[in-house]
Length: 277
Image 1 (tube, rainbow, N blue to C red):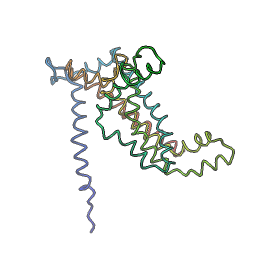
Image 2 (cartoon, one colour):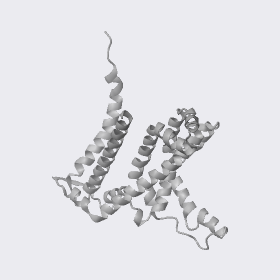
Image 3 (cartoon, rainbow, N blue to C red):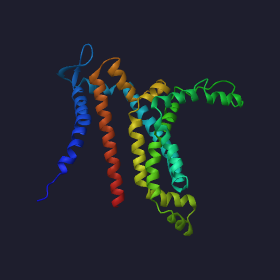
């Protein structure tokens, strides 16, 4: 009689997910329904005050800013990642280019952000180059605005988009592009109508890998953003460490998690319907 070892194999994974994902989310969910303590923390009394505070106009503006910056960063990342992944997949130097894509992971995340501060600052490399070439006469404020946040997030998440796209494009039959051109399609039409539908799974993965972490970003807007680029991650950190309003920070985290999960499920569901259609 053959024994089923499936539960034994999945037990370590189940424990890991429970301890590091389910339990923390459950604690955050519980805290969001409790009262704020006088000196921080929570009081064991049921309250919906944290959720009623979410209707604050300031929070709604920050939420809109968060969605805009995350969507803009995702769109720009995708625009850059698709041609880059296509070029790598068609190149004979695939290993070298993939190594160049992965190299940023070898450097600390904060060091890379500070490198962008050195590039975009008033005394940074970009301003010095523009002044030296007489394109501008005085330093331009490239930092501490929404555009700086978007640029740095695009740089940060570009490898996460290139790698799944490359994996999908590499499996694509490029002779289909030649066939489409033989049938009268231009090169751009062949790319849009043949290549893009065939690599849809890679595009979806790239979008998810970019939008989800960008939506919950904290460090980038904190270091290179200004008041107009404050994101929900910064609000959560402020409420947790400065005002010590744990229920409010927990309620924002719960809503952020639910919106992300619902968005992913709807996105995957719609993609599944298109594939079966």
